[in-house]
Length: 396
Image (cartoon, rainbow, N blue to C red; front, side, top):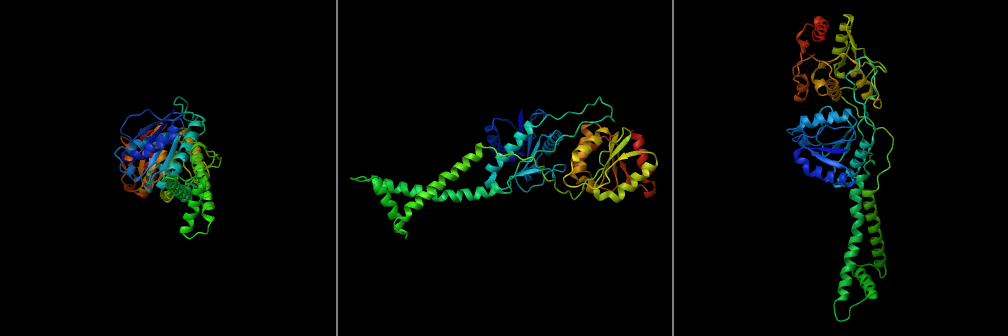
């Protein structure tokens, strides 16, 4: 079992710090900057993606992104944000551990290690069976990526508060040590009474009443050991986990929807599109339906807590093909990107249909390479449904 730590080359030092914490838990780690061929992510492994601005411009970003999506499909992905850089399309709306505050990272690394532990202990995901008929019942979708349990900012608060609470004790230790050494030097070294008298005199020199300084030192030193104990406990005692599902963030490009329980037949085509293009996509599909084609697409509202992955994975695995309604909004949609990835993963024929003039980003071009596409925006509106039916028939 391996924990892959995927990172931009310039984030290697940060990845090594996280590697130390995870290996302290007894896990074997491999650093992955995308330039070295590593074994595929399998059941029992975990893939930790460190998202930063440097990752956006990394030369091996596409390879790291591909491995991250593969890990997501298997329920093996943990996303960690190192700064306010934007994750690649397809990964932006997934739950992530927020490690943007550098002073709190030692505490956040333990949250990441907890998430890794949960991923590696999760049941194995049943892989697709390519020999099964396309319209057969498919197994449940892979689980959503594990999100580390967050204490609502408590780690960041502790990172600021703990040093402040330790400071009085450190000062008490320093002052007591200096007084003790001063008493031990000379022809008649002092003992315990002289130390107590020296501490009291130290406070009197700074305006405190006699007898107060000694108690302040006792309280400060006691607080020091109490805080130190909490810090040590945080490294070795794991946090109690909860079963609460992570709240899914809203996606402005495509608030997803689906008809519950509907699974397409083998001759149906899955339609991947951005919700912003509803007014163009739905009439187009309805016209193609009247010509006898079958489609699967979402048309009903979905709440943030609904399980997107299960319905979509089953629909894509059962469909006869996937048509992508290409537009600028679609190329910016996390859901569309993951649907294209799943279509490629399950070896479904892909049909890019451009409903507006838009240049595919390089990560989309990877999936569109060698695939016949249709520039529907060049076709008269009244002929578009017929053109869609023709290209689906040509690639069938």
